[in-house]
Length: 106
Image 1 (cartoon, one colour):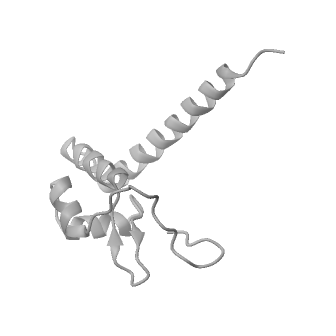
Image 2: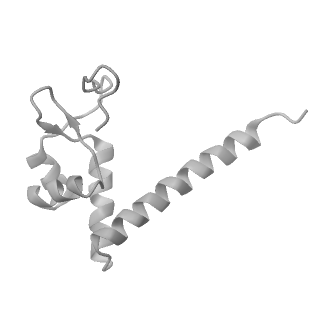
């Protein structure tokens, strides 16, 4: 995770749920070791406390569930990484298109 120029871990937004790895594993229906592997492979980056403890957000849980779906469909972790990358790029393009369409014409 990028700790920014100050080297500090960013604080989560108020009202945003944070889960320990054991809870995240239960919610996602996977094992803690799998979650650590996904992090090692760059598939997700949980927030960390100043002591280094992983904390997972609802969006991290959604990513874990998506990883599980893709693995169930027969993809390996490299394939999962590519699909997640393409889905993120697609979402970014959709947001840019909506912004462009919302601009008034000169």
